[in-house]
Amino acid sequence: MSSEFGLRDWLLSEEPSSRRQAALSSWYNGWLRFRSNTLAMVGLCVLILIIFAAIFAPVLATHDQFAQDLGQRLLRPGVDGHLFGTDGLGRDIYSRVLYGARISLYIVLLVAMVAPLLGLIVGTVAGYAGGWVDIILMRITDIFLAFPRLILALAFVAALGAGIENAVLAISLTAWPPYARIARAETLTIRNSDYIHAIRLQGAGPMRIVTRHIWPLCISSLVVRVTLDMAGIILTAAGLGFLGLGAQPPSPEWGAMISDGRAYILDSWWVATIPGLAIFSISLAFNLLGDGLRDVLDPKDNGS
Amino acid sequence: MTTIFVTLLGLLFVTFMIGRVMPIDPVLAVIGERATQAQYEETFIALGLDQPLMVQFWIYVRDVMHGDFGQSIRTGQEVSSDIARVFPATFELATLGTLFGVVIGVPLGVLAAVRRGTWIDQIARFVGLIGYSMPIFWLGLVGLLVFYGILGWVSGPGRVGIFYQGIVEPITGMLLVDSLLRGEWDVFKSAFSHIILPASLLGYFSLAYISRMTRSFMLEQMNSEYIITARVKGLSEWQVVWGHAFRNIRIQLITVIALAYANLLEGSVLTEIIFAWPGIGQYITTSLLANDMNAVLGGTIVIGSIFVGINIFSDLLYRFFDPRAK
Figure 1: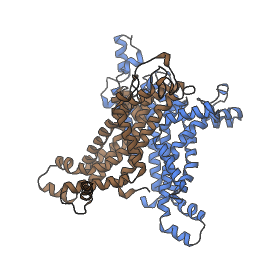
Figure 2: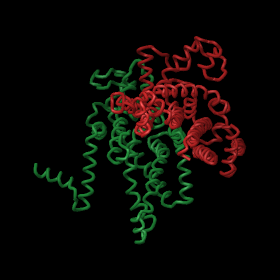
Figure 3: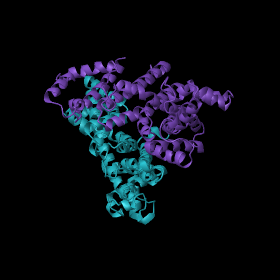
């Protein structure tokens, strides 16, 4: 017990004796503030549960996700060991929903890496370079921002062809502009600070200044924004899947599963309803988590 | 003015490029795969594909400016006349949806701000959170299941009952308005029971957004000093809230409602699929699945331009009415 108290005191120390202690201490304080937000913790738990389900899908699944059995089609939930029933081709919905979590998380992770990176590059270059570069890059950003997102993603997927990777690309191409705006705003406030001047005097080039000294300071605002956007990304991806433009059959993508269940909605409600609940819980979890993170990382804007 | 122009030009450039990188050969799409080489080359030149890319873009912009989006392969009609035919259905749906969102969302947001921290505030927050997390197409399906399948309160997919189809000669293209103008009460009733579910579902999503923004605008006002002054003067709570605080958020609210409306146009794509609503969203997606690029890009340009237009309009409105923004 005493060692634990020691660690806690060390983390909460008012006078950190090393850089590492100061950094860990600020992380710990953030965690304490985050932990006191019940709803955000609920979001985090749900998310961990979904990640867990995605990782251990092969162990948790009771049936083969692709195995069809027309004799067993449209069984009610709970019948014959099918926890969530079966779909129009007799496939086990519970197992498919589990594997579907992998696809959703895969899409979200990819978009969450590609779009902010694109925005970060455009925004910091525009903010640091200024002048014409800034005007042109921001004008392009405005144009993309002015587009309705789903429609633009639809048009991109139409051009690139349906499929998960193309859906990711299409969503990223529509999602980067807000990140560029945030990164540019951060860059403008940092650009003329003393420590940047100091680094420049030491002989650092623009490339090094932007990547090593400006990027790290943009990260926290971007992380909050990404978490808040994740629900939107999931909903867009599911929408594309629903339209048949995302993951292709027989892949158990949740949006595509809802589309499959559409034909049976009045007689066999569970086929479309259960994957929908899965989408709802993951995006709700991300929204709760994002709200909580915003409160922790951005104390200016708490709750009001 | 330049902003509008540059943005619209950018929009056209993006759709133009999308049209160019398509894996579908535009010539084959017109003449079919069995055409001879000579026919192929003739069409290739007729479509202007031998010109440099910049010239092609220029011709494209000129055509679109004249309202010419090319021909739809699927329907065999001009895309512009197709869109003119389907657009009123979307307009009707989105307008009713926004109306729903405003009528419920604004009072909810105001109440949530005035009674901050009470149960009504919690409800408003909950409503918003659900709205931000729910896939709209799924809510549509569940709505159909519950209100049409189980309760039977509303009519199913489609715009009007099958017996009433084609009775009303279009005037505005909006069935609710047309049937009223023509005095066809039965058609109006049928159309109303068809539109109420998709419109209120769409409205729910704009309600989530509108009530959240209203709440934060109102909170800002309620914390300012003139509100304390008004209270000290002995005005009634109603006067303070609606006469003072609400008056000052009207302009901000109009811009929010305009944005919500623009978002609804987009949200209607998925809703229209679920409810078999013959609007522009359904037009774009069916064309998409049929590889009918002219139709897809034409629809994208129309929705995109409306989106840009509404954005700029709300921006201008803000600058015009709010002296601080100058």
